[in-house]
Image 1 (spheres, rainbow, N blue to C red):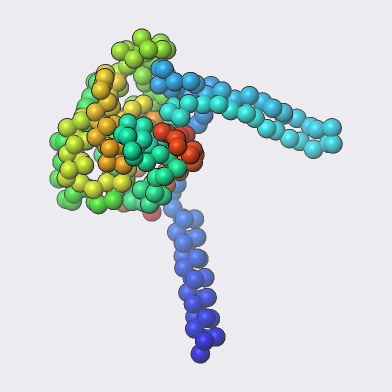
Image 2: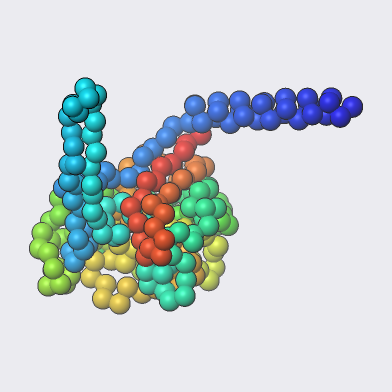
Length: 263
């Protein structure tokens, strides 16, 4: 009897494994990440990406070999803001639960509202409109992605950031859409989300000086994904997201490889 039960369990696990592999094989996978290169856009005060070649070519033993060193700020390109970035005594990158970074997601499209308005604030009405259009509240535990359409400008710094200048004086020249702090407050008080992300350089809009949306969300241990791309390939709901940052111990942020899995 014991052997029979073991055989049944083995068959069940194999069946589940085959079904999982089949589902992944036939899912559409959308890469929501920009690559890292000399063109990668960073916050105007952050250190930019640099790749140094250690070796590239044929060794004296006759085999081909390539290796590089790289250096980068935590916050640049497609990356994650960990709660500790703007909220004391909260989680760093390595402490974030994986269940908050992997799971079901929705997309809220505000491209029509943000068109022609680089200072657009994604507001409570945008969330309520999505809920009314789809006949449901934002599901508990969702990863919420906000599409402004700005990723089409990347990596043109003038169009994407609002300026090509660098340094502290350039901060006042930043122009791009972000999340209204009132909407951030509405989300944390009325909905239960695991993470949030968008296709601009910051969850706060370019002209923000107090970064209130960051503070509101990150104080609740809700991480933010910034500089996403290809959100136009996603449906409003019914897909999953896998967002895995570099696991930097004590990190306030990290480079992020984020994908969407569509059934």
